[in-house]
Image 1 (tube, rainbow, N blue to C red):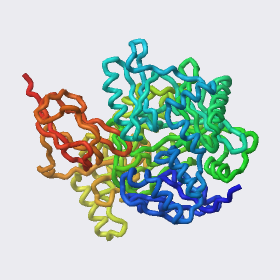
Image 2: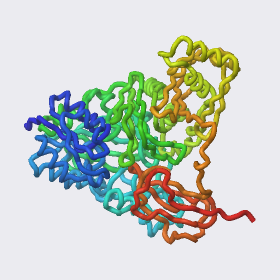
Image 3: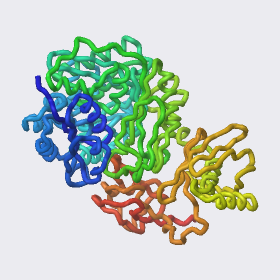
Length: 636
């Protein structure tokens, strides 16, 4: 048995904070590593000690295994936990950790290596009797093989994946998937297999010790995905026949034994509409969605990882599961704008209710461009699925999240969507429902009224004369305020009382109580520090309002056809042959911008001529930077 005393987490954000929480409970000293942008991040503040990794980009910091091992030795750590992402599935890093005399909190390097390539892993699984989809040679594909799914052989997280529905686009899709995979994982190998329409993504959590025991800890459904990345997960996977569950458990244990697995891992399957399971991949690390399994089984998987690494034996069988758990990933992104990630200051993050919140942020933290845009994981556990789903939706609906656009409304809408509540789940959920789920938010007029009343309310320390004078002026002549939100503008003319359909019960700087159509509502109002945005939260919804100046700045104009960077990022590709003077068509991809671990296409806004091109491959650009200009063709 090894007796661990100090743990370094080779990661950042939410997962580092979560691992530190367990390590602290077990009496371990904790060590964080951080890039320069993360110098004051929550995971650094949560650790007993922290070591700087100079630089900002992951390649210079969290992917520098040599620097991380040096940090662990310097800080006196005797173990390294990789979390997920970054170096968590890097066999060479695992070996280097062990060769340095440190304990690796993960599976043997040989197991990581065996599963690192999806193509090689499938060969192993075929030999172990695990069900597989037959591979397809893209060069020999026929219409009968369509649709196809192109997948990067290395890595995960949806990078290097493309769905192909016609033979003419295979070559372009292969090139794009390979380029993205090479950029993300340093390996451009891509393979093809049948794309299963309306399949379910179901996985099995496994945990194995060094004494021959392998647990299959139930199933999880992770079918609700955007860009092949999970959004909502739950355990157990609803609606599976017992025979199918048993088959999945058996296959997962066989997969683990085939590579002499040790520690926590996940075996992922695609389940067809008629209930046939096929192996997708094995993740040789802790999964983002592990909390739903923890909730259902009453376990701490990180604590078990540490005990297994110390050499402890697992009991012969796991505890019995109880109830149902659902997890939602709260992202700083705009689902209505092609899932565009958001950066900036997160002024408020407050999620009420009896839910578990795993996060790497607190109010006042900055969400930067270099890392994944996930703000938090919110988990509800209840005796039944319906209760867990309802509790999670209620907590998210009541959350106050200020400063950044998030997918919160999408999550609430998804959890209350009839197909989801009836457990009709498949990976095409957002293909069918995204437009409905991202429709314009409820009318913001009442929220604008509440914001205006709060703005007009005197400060708590104002003199009695100022208070009375303010209200007297409002009664003699209506006041006007203008706000914009989601592309709409609202002009509010108001007295402190007497509005159509609305009765003002009270108005303070941060809380306005209105009676709307006979129903009393409370509106919480908060302004950011420089007064450029007003946040209004109520049971009618949450709104971010921008005060509109009476006299707009005439310089706030952009040349027609200008393509501006929608976020800070790196230009990773420019369309082949694109130069000033090139004719382009509306919707044609011109540039590819990478930000926050996602690749975004910059499209031609109209058909016409490219008159300017300012972007080059490898260039770092700021938000709003001019990338190119397209002069629209005049109508004939």
